[in-house]
Length: 140
Image 1 (tube, helix red, strand yellow):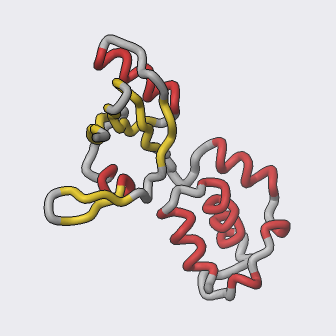
Image 2 (spheres, rainbow, N blue to C red; image 1 turned 90 degrees about the vertical axis):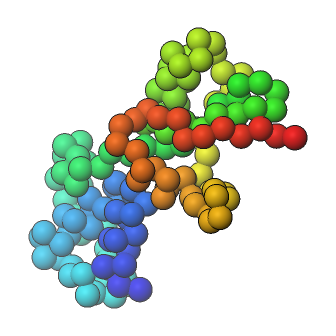
């Protein structure tokens, strides 16, 4: 595996800290995208600079998670939100009641939609603003 592969994965899966570390090491020319992953040593980074980069969100991460909120004993709504609190507040405002519970779900969970399969990560690309309702689930 190459540095390029890990860097692209860190961007794709929104691993902000890792992406910023690699970005910093690339900018400082301590590594290149074509280097083997065994050449990557995060200890070579200036940790203070990387912390500032993360704080300033240099790479423009806008992490959005998916939350499962229980509406009734067998009914759930999935909401895209920045964090659990935002998901609960959006639910409460939308449904005028508190959810029975709220749990973060995996963005890579795949489910059937129409004639195909889609993950929450892919589905999230269809939305322009958050928080947003992704869908409903009723357990039989």
